[in-house]
Image 1 (cartoon, rainbow, N blue to C red):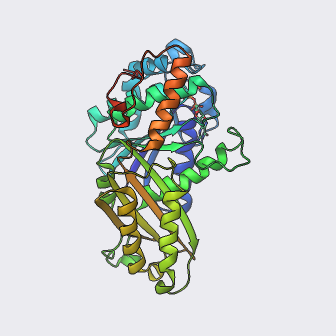
Image 2 (cartoon, helix red, strand yellow):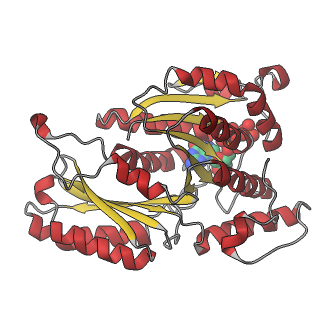
Image 3 (cartoon, rainbow, N blue to C red):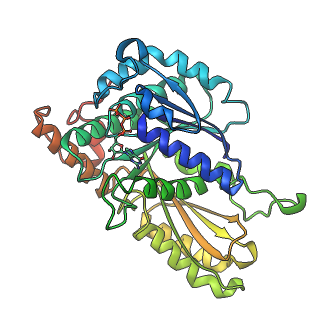
Length: 366
Ligand SMILES: Nc1nc2c(ncn2[C@@H]2O[C@H](COP(=O)(O)OP(=O)(O)OP(=O)(O)O)[C@@H](O)[C@H]2O)c(=O)[nH]1
């Protein structure tokens, strides 16, 4: 899938950079452009990708200090500038746009939903959000901001791929010190999803039918709402038949312990990508893993395909679409509501998880 990335806020800029770097290192060429947008000049300075400062007339390059409503209004005012900066990058070959942001801060949290809305108004390709949820150890403001931002961005985007900052954090990482490591893991996992479908036949030969196509990624995300990605890998034996159980166990691991949104296994749609040396990927193993995924997610729409990579490992990449009914999402929203109650922003609470995005428990941003 040929994509253009727009990072909003500090986390957005860093994660977009990590994705662009991974894509370049691997030579996939799925990332066709990357721009970082921020209200804080200092956060843009160290980034190697293109940057754009917004809200200058009102915050003078000093950021919004966690105020996501202010950020939403600054993005609204400067949206034309951002769209202009992107217009040269979003060429006819772009198949999707990803707006990347940490949902718990100010600039990304408030700016991303507005930018998604504006991009959808002017571009025909799907506009997805890639949102980072704050760790449970972060304070009430982060949780409330993320809850409100999530509610709004899910409504505006074609789909919102969520990564929980607690998901891929090593046990000994503190929230801050672990960012680089989290960003690298995130870049590999999401980067492989983006690159799936970019595989070309060796020496100009036709791409085998079993190879995953970009449209399968888009179809899986078509369910809308919230999406999650899972990943696991194992050493591959030289013969395909010897790897049947490796495909099965990596698929299970990707879902049970490797998801970007832990335990969000109830899904409307799923895609299983088996990555590795084509000769080592067992058809029987992939079929078996797909059936298991169908049962585990309760989804009748489980797609599958290979991602040819020269590697002595075999990896399972699982993309789940429409996971917003999962207990994990409700747990986060409850955390955000609890934080909102603490900060005196909430009057009532409801318990139906599926209705969580329609009710007024947590105000949207706009
Ligand atoms: N995964 C990841 N999360 C990050 C990173 N930096 C910050 N975060 C998370 O993002 C949230 C804060 O968002 P930031 O992007 O730092 O804030 P901002 O959008 O720039 O907003 P302001 O600083 O208020 O203008 C918190 O929940 C952090 O845990 C990062 O590099 N990687």
